[in-house]
Length: 80
Image 1: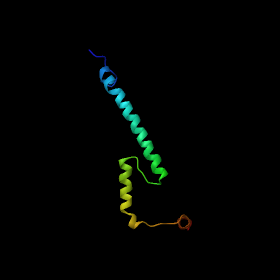
Image 2: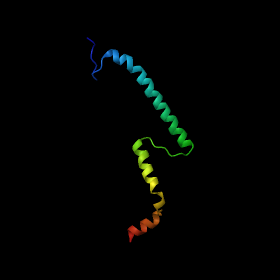
Image 3: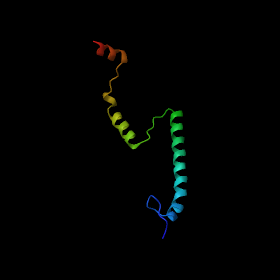
Image 4: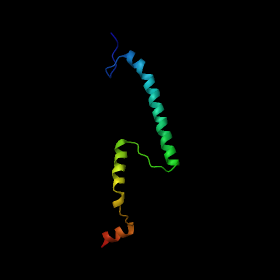
C-alpha cells in the first residue's frame, strides 16, 4: 500500500506531479511579473483578475455619461 499524504494523494503521485507543477507555477509568476512591468512602463491599464476586468468594462460602458467634478467644488457643496 502506498503511504498517504495529508491531501489524500499518494507519494508516487506527488513525485510525478509535484515538480512540473512547481515549475509551471514559477513560470506563471515570471510571466505575470513581465506583463505587469511592461504594462506600467508603457502606461497601459491592466487588470489582474477577471472580476477586475469585468468591472472596468462596466465602467467603460458609462464613459459617455461621465461627469467630472473638481474637488474644491464638491468641498464647497458639503460646507454649505
